[in-house]
Image (tube, rainbow, N blue to C red; front, top):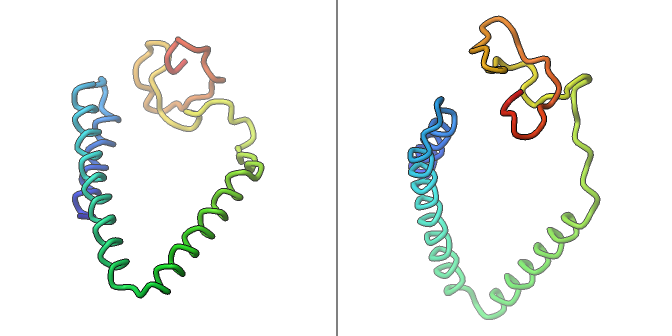
Length: 125
């Protein structure tokens, strides 16, 4: 099952990174990944039910209590103030340091992006 998940994730990454964009391929890869994740969720639910059914009543109660405590801790973490993102000095562009296609100039083999973030609707820059 893990192999199927890894293959589906790799196929989705490849479809997303393809230039030019092939929307049908991206949608197909995303659907395949969703199907694998759904199969894994069903397997997890079955395993949980199988394990829960062999527990004593006391163990079931303790398991429910521990799950509730875990959910409460997770909720507390979500409510805390988020940590500030670490950024490199002078990093105004999410593509800084990568080869990118800028303003219709084609791929830059030896140059890297040194532009500030683009106004919305312009593409990369």
